[in-house]
Image (cartoon, rainbow, N blue to C red; front, side, top):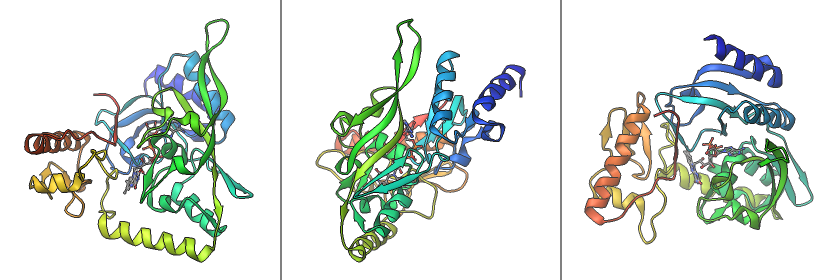
Length: 313
Ligand SMILES: Cc1cc2nc3c(=O)[nH]c(=O)nc-3n(C[C@H](O)[C@H](O)[C@H](O)COP(=O)(O)OP(=O)(O)OC[C@H]3O[C@@H](n4cnc5c(N)ncnc54)[C@H](O)[C@@H]3O)c2cc1C
């Protein structure tokens, strides 16, 4: 570790605790695609106060940061991340009040879906196979099988970056109503503004537990039969283009199973790209470009990516 890096690590440790700060850590260990170079700093705040203080520290010292949920929608570049990566997985409390549940940003969405079912609360069944965190799901307006976050979210707590009277940037706690999220397909206001998601409250409906569990079983079976869950990926690579099915377009271009380095178009679901074991982020990016070009040349359809690319190029 070089001297200045060590100073920054100590400063972060003073806020988050020494056991909660890592340096030069491979992001491949923290993403479902299992690719990505090292993060200079990886911090695991254990509570909202620590998270707020880390953000304020980054603002005061002009250090860029990145919020990491479960890393299930990311391709981190092979050169890695020159910033403070703030992992939310230790912010993982949730509680039920009446027919609502409030969950911290780092709560595992699948766990929350199942916990809601066990409490006979319906609404989050669609999320039973989405391997993200609550923060990542609100950021993405994650959804599946006709459901999405926007349909159940009541409000979120967040940090907003605002200027105070002296012109200094501050992390200010705010509440965002459902409408203010400006949800649309795989989009929320968190993608437009520098907001840090802290927690969300979801409105659920009391239903028969067995019915909820049977819906979860049905959706799980459907997912397992269609998706290559046995290989590392970040789920569907592309957004759904109006009027087309991504998988069908890719298949009709003859790209099922097409390989580039260690990355391949999934044999099981052409909308997925999988890591065959030794893929790099560059392999994945090159394969995505190849798929986009091929589909455009054949059908004139521009495929936009749903997964997000981060890190030093
Ligand atoms: C096998 C598989 C199946 C999938 N199926 C689906 C599916 O059916 N539907 C679907 O919508 N998605 C699906 N996904 C994609 C992914 O799980 C979702 O997009 C999920 O919501 C991402 O959450 P995450 O915690 O992993 O976010 P990350 O990948 O860690 O981050 C995604 C973005 O959210 C931001 N972010 C995360 N936490 C915060 C926070 N607290 N505050 C501010 N910004 C934050 C990050 O900075 C990043 O820009 C799938 C992925 C896989 C691997």
